[in-house]
Image (cartoon, rainbow, N blue to C red; front, side, top):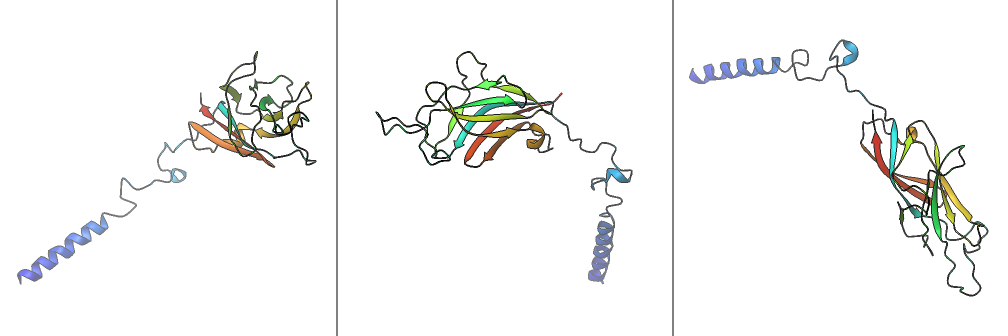
Length: 189
């Protein structure tokens, strides 16, 4: 009889526990704000600015599109690698926002980080408005001022932002063999 009484109390206790686990009555159950639930759903903020802290080149084509080496020097035939730099420029604007220093004899499989500007230009970080579109141009410095364009990528903050209230971003952008990484911070109001 004692076992039957214990079993009966165990069944009653288990029934009470299961009844208490209903989503309708559980105060910690998720609430659907669209059905008159929690008035404070998660709000996704939109940044006002993308602050670019660094630009790095992670790769580019070994040769020009016609197959020629980037630099040809009959006196130094082993020096046929490009002398690279990057320019950050707003679409439709002729003034660069950032013009980097140059890296001589760059190897197409190496990574080059650019934060230092060419003399007379502003250094990184640079702020870009969320709604604007910029381009990063990769150039090969040649003498005298006939620099080769090696490619470019578009930087559009609204296309990079993951709508996740992130504070940092790190994105590699591609255009053919050109791989350019932008890294920085999202700025909210």
